[in-house]
Image (cartoon, one colour):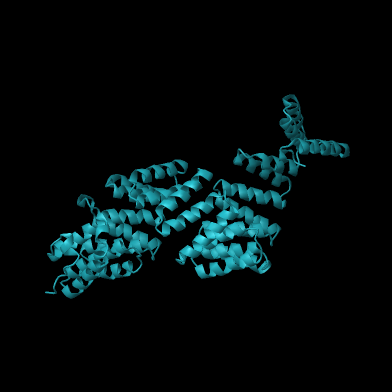
Length: 479
């Protein structure tokens, strides 16, 4: 009976069991450690010191001594890892110690080492479900999706009746963007138990969001929160659903609740910053991003987001610096390159425009992610600025198909208009201009400043009056 259950009855039982244990064999280090904790609870400091002294003077230590010390090193993960490693030196095939070593390594962000430790666990117990589940998550985190899927498939093969098996594979499929497969696996997980129901619902909500079935996502979010109302990640998940639905105030409420439950939840703080950004409350957005960076200044995505915010605030030097910081921290950060391409291709302060650099950064972004619509878009704008009008047309046509936002599609149509106009292809230019106007006319009062700027630029090229009243209901005649 462990003394940390923290009540007099169990402390009394602990002491009696320890007395019995001492009657069977010589006390060990763990014996003195447990008795010391009992005296701590009973507020007997002299006895605590005595037990500490006896424990330190023990000549030898056992695997369990080191394991137990590692388990109790809650305030120092590094110290816990050292004790687990000492235990493994004494008994290399101790599965439990190796599993907790992997877990602690992961908590410290030493993901590669955690993966190696989990592999060691599977060598000892090839069919252990928690190990396979954790290994799948870590391999996905490292981008080793094929290997993660192999482990997940083995989990299902070994124990097809276990919800953990289907959950692991569902999360692996979700990570790879195979949403229908993920949905199938998560539904199967629910058939075989409810031990991890809140986690299954959380992941299924993410799948539904990806499928744009927001009503189903919200239903799963609500149910998950009912099951685990003190779990920060669930409020973050529901906040993200509200954000996708455009219900920004409700999203902010959920992100705030997530932060209350976990003040170091960077994803919730960042999510709230996004909402403030969409509400054009830039001061609050800046404050949240700064708070998130205080928690983890090396997270590249936060610097990318800050670059976007600085662009909106017309602080272009800061925007360029933030985007470069993102790339320096993570050379594969697509958004960092996209932000730089956007600044050099589109900046409202034309002195910052540099088509050559815009081409360079957009091309790098596409090398990293050929399907990124924003990278394609800014490559198209850079091609237009560089005089490669045919290339711009081809690139922009592909890019605008990937946009859901009407303002981005309208801007893309304007740039297609400009590209055809430069090629003296007037009919095609008018076609794209009319498509842009059709998108803008119904929501003229809600056009962003950027959209208005691109429209004005296009109209100036075509020699069309730029007043909004005229621009939204007059279309040029084909020359």
